[in-house]
Each structure stands twice: as C-alpha cells, then as structure tokens.
Length: 616
Image (cartoon, rainbow, N blue to C red; front, side, top):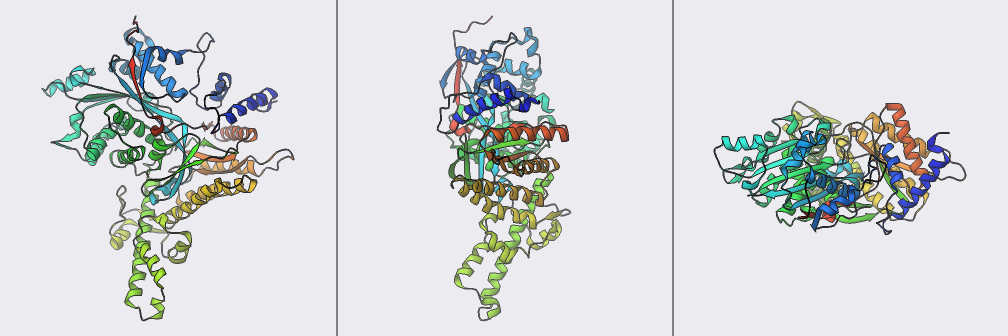
C-alpha cells in the first residue's frame, strides 16, 4: 500500500489537521505543528521555519541561542519560526571566525560575518510574499483585489555606522582612496542564497553616487546604473529603496549602511518575491533612520522602486499585501491607486493553497508588458468613443437619431469620456457601448497616429509591435466584477453552492488570463487536475473537497491558487495533484500554505549583542 494512503500516514494527517484547525483565526496562536510532521512536510516540497535536528539526532536548540546572545530592545517576534531562525543565523555570524571555519568560506557568509559591528544596534524587518487569491493583473486597471500574505518572507538586517567606523570591503576602501577623499557614506549589501540564483552575493556603492550636485539622480539614471552588470541588477530592489526615500521624502543619508538580505520567498513563482524584498528593505531603512511611514505609503514608495528603478511595470497590490496584510485574512483593496477597504476573514470551512507550476514568472517579461499596454490602449479608445458620442449628441441636440440621450445617460457617457480606470466601467456598459468598437489587435504606429499616447507612465508603446487590445481591456472590467462577487460570497452562508460559486469565479479568471495570452501549459495542467478532483464521483461518505483554481499574479507561469474545504480530504488531494504533476512533468511543485503578518503588523526589531558574550 502506498505510504500516501497507509494507516500511519492517515493517522499522522489527522493529527496535523487538528493542529491546523486550532491555528485558525481566533484560536490559540502559540500552538505549533509537531517537529516530526514538519520534517515530513519538507520532504513533500514545503518549506518551514520549524526546528531541525542536529547531527546527533537531538533537537537543534539554536532557536534559544539568539535569546542568550541578543537583547531585543524593541519589537515582537510574533512567535514566527522563520524570524527565530534568522536571529539564530545572526547569532552564528556574530560568533563566527571565518578564517578558522570552513563553512564560512562561501563568499556571502564570509562577507556577512565581517561587515556588521556586533557591538552596535541592528534593525531587523520582515515582509512576506503573497498569494493572489483574486484580482491579479487587473490591479493596474483599478480593480478590487483580494490578497493573502503567505508564510514565506524576506528578512533584512540593517546597521547604520559613521563612515569613519564602517568596516569596508577592500575594494570599497580602494575606491575611496582612489577618489582622494576621506571616509564617506557607503552602502554594502549581502544577499543570502544569491549564488544559487546566478547573481552576485554582494553589492556596494558610495551613496554619493545617488546624488547629482545637491539633488538625487533621476530614476532613469539609476536604472541604467544597476543594469551595468546583470549579476548585480538584483541590488536595485534593495538599494533602490534608499534613492526613492531621497527623491520622494527628501531624506539624506549621512551614515554608512550595511544590509543583510535573507529571503525564503522563492523567485519566479508569482508570489511576490520582489515586493517582499522591497518592503522589508525599506522597512529596515525607515526603522533605522526614525522615519515614520505608514504601511500604505511605504507600499506605494516600494512600487516606485519596481516601476522606475528596476523597470518592471507592476501594479501596487503586491507591495500592499506584503506591507499591510494580516495572517489568515484577505487584504481587500481597490487599486485606485491603493484604497484599502479592510481585511476579509477567511471562513473556517474554506482554505487556500498555492501550487507552483515550475514555470518561471516575471512581470518584466514581454507578455505582461504588452497586455498592460493593450489594456491602456483600450481605455484610451473607450474614452475617445465616449467623447465622440457626447460631442455628437451636444452638436445635434435637435436630431432624434443622435440626441436621444437623457440627462442621466449623458452624465454616464461624460464619466466614461474621462475614465481614469478601466475597472470603473461596468460589464454591461462595456458590452452595450464599447465591446464592438475595440479592435482585436492594433499595431503601435497606427495607435500612436490616432491617439498619440496610451497614458501609462511605466510602459512604452513599440510602434513596430502589434498589441492585443480587446481581450486585454475586457479582462479587468470583468475581473473587477468577479472579485466583488467573490468578496460578497465569502460572507454568505456556508454551503456547497457557496464553494461552487467561488470556484467558478476563479476558473473564469483563469481562462480570461489565457485569452489575454498570459497562460501556460503548466498552470493549465494544474487547473485541469483540480477539475478532475472536483468532478470525481465521490463516495456517499465524502463531499467534494476542491472547488476551483486560477493562475495568479502576472501569469505566464508561476503559481496556481486553489480553493477547497478546510478538510483532510482536501489536503490529500493537494498532495495527489503534486505527485501527478511530478509524474507528468518531472517537476515536483512547491506548495504554499499558511500565512503570516505583513511588514506593518510585524513592525521591526532592534537588537544589541549582549555585552556578557564571551568570544573564543
């Protein structure tokens, strides 16, 4: 008998379900999953911050060592295993002697062990990734979105130091000497895990490089600065937060800054790894420099990092979810540009999972950008059509054929002529007045001749390229309606009909992505597996477990969000999907489940190494 269906496995799953139910909102948050089950979870492709076993088989007590090594001057750990792990890593670095320890010969570890002054304060911020439950790419068109922060997060440890006391790397020292100047502020960054992602593990720059005379350099110049070396381009997500604070808030940095970045949010999976890095980085910079920035404002500033310095045309929902989210709740936000409506409780009988397709997602990719361009083109065409209708009506107010428009309709068309966001157009108005006037496709040159500009500040129309317009414009209009319906259904009475309707809305979203050209074979395969599970003929003793699924985020791969009952049967089917996907593709999907606080709720930690530590 397969272990998946063995009695021991079923008993083990039953025990863990009890723990999961206890951890639902309103229950005791301090209950944790047994360590023996966590190891099994890791074997299934999940990640966890739970304790590991030492080589001798005993539980590793490194979690407790940071309590002995560091005094927490400010903040709350929120009993987060990953934060405890991160502080344990800092504790190990503080005690390390790289020259005598072989495990610290890796470039990133060697650099990290040497660049903090462990006698001074260190600030720690944390920001999670997010699961796009509903909304997705409609965010840039002003849609309502529903986002859940995931368990995986990015941690950033930051220390500011007077330039004369900053421990510079040798090449940074040489650079300053070549300039013939005394100590000036330097930014040094170490990124854990960088070598596994084919990027440089360290980055440094003189902060004066961010200045042009007495003003910050332009975002365009910064984008070129970080693009010089592909292995260093990742630093734009971290260092870019400093330039945005300088430009938007007038902050000036007189001290050197050291930043250690450690992220458990996997890249290219569509769960906002970039947003978590940006939000954690800016949160750490703000905390260390006494900047009181609200989570919402911080998210908007981080969006500027990604749009203008990194050069990725994302909407704001990723940064908002990472900054403003709360565990096991959906952040409801209207992206016009970032109006938080509140937090939506996930009913106790409903659960969401993320299943990674293994196909790398990127909002910087051509498909995402071209669909965004098409949506903004569609908006301009709708506005022009509405303006023409209104103009004809006013010019021919004595002709029934053109002027049979009452005052209310005239006001409606007037609003559509000044449409700020596509999502402010209802589906019935789109179908009645505009669906047939939008072309399937249009080339950039033809559009620019007729409309001059699509009025999107973060994308550029290529005159030689053809853009799909109708599908790209239709998607956010209908998606906004679907998300509103989804939010309302979550508060309705628990029933099969409720779950079926929620799942149907997710399926509709998925196929609308495909119509825009943002689908992928991998995500389609996962959605098909969910449908097979849903439509299996259940036994008399079993109810349907999984009800719907959809591609997430920017599409073109990444993660599929699945909705189902919060039950053991659902968990078994998720594992079956994982195994069947591996059998078909050779790739074992990562599973995303669980949740954690956003950066705003987490706040920040201020640490100081205890003076009583004895060093060998």
